[in-house]
Image (cartoon, rainbow, N blue to C red; front, side, top):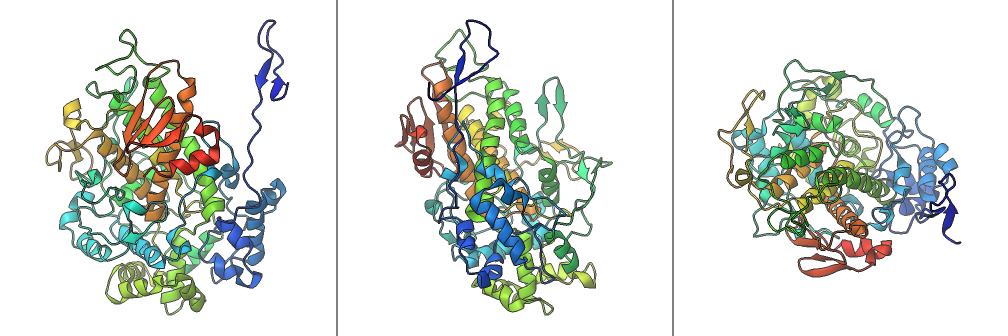
Length: 595
């Protein structure tokens, strides 16, 4: 029978056949909308210049920091044609492996395959070079403020200078332009510096601007079975930047070694005094070791361990109005269900964003852009004219910051303070080997964050205030070794959904604080993750025996999304209807409406 295969080994009388699922294949050669297609069709004499704004870490580089053409061509051939032999024959520098470029070519049975989803081009690939420069300036400020406690930002002169400069730059995507962003300036204060929530429409309260910058879900104790875990950082990578130390990759020779894929042996150390997260360096170290869904699993455990927390009203086992009053959820709609779902959507999110990383966009990492800034602005810069050409209209933004004593000027001063070889405009990195060996856009951590938090908001009643469900907001003491309930800003206003959105931004922007991602990596990837989780929740509808049921959540754009047995609505409008999810391209296109 077509579509069926023999499943030998079953006992007599059992079903002998099972459905066969042939793997869908991604389009090959790469579609015209992808960065890989554009690069493959770039004239050979222009390829190295075009590569300046794309990812090529771990490939072969010349002494000017530019990729060797044959190495880049071999890389593009694999990404364009998907032949296993092409992946085996990539001309890498041979020092550090690329991270799983074939993951984006994998299909998925819980959602549409990743290549069907779209995210907008990153700013510098869309002609918006001023925004790419603004993002770099924000990253410079993050590096300069790594050792300053977040709670001290309002009174810190450096944070005040950062807020002033960033307020004048086209840094933030307008909430109404998510699929083709229009970037604008917004007022930034020291209290709102480096926060998320930018998809919040004008005139609505940005919940991520309430309370401390750090989410309660990164500070509260985690009930883990019979254990109770304090969220102090008790493990660190021994080569990671430590407070008051020397950041990595601020000398040209070190930077070039890392672009060529130099690996740095490391080990895990146990700090003498574990502390709670207080500053950008702390978050950077957290996101270097975390399992990608870790923070959201912890959040789920915290909420499940708080008796006052309610389930979403559409859960058939919610205690206020249960559909089945003599039962409780477990494998479906219960605690094991949500704990496993957080992990499941994370894997789906990774496969989807990996297609964007390697084929859709192939965006350069911030550290590579820092190399362009150094070459363009420093008197000793190599191939300065080519770097200036790559920076395009962003060059003027960077020059203005340099001339006015902004972040660009300050980063050179800070780097040079560590020695003559460090007189550079390079981005100071937290990790010895800089970014991972995969493209920057979208961001894996941010896509997983968007997916996991969406699943949690669909499961729990997010409008509840923490104080009303028995969760008392906290902040670390000045030394960071204990928690206190005294002096918590906006303690009475913090909600479950607001703190979930905040923890997603903390983790995603925490990667920016380490120097390995851009703001737009965060903002676009969160929406991709949100759409992936929505798709998974809709695909799962065929599995449940219970009727009726409904998941609902408040999106990052502050609109209500409802997922039911036969439809998905967004702000009251129909997005998916019936079996739309059986057409993966159609499903992905329709889900792009959700912000």
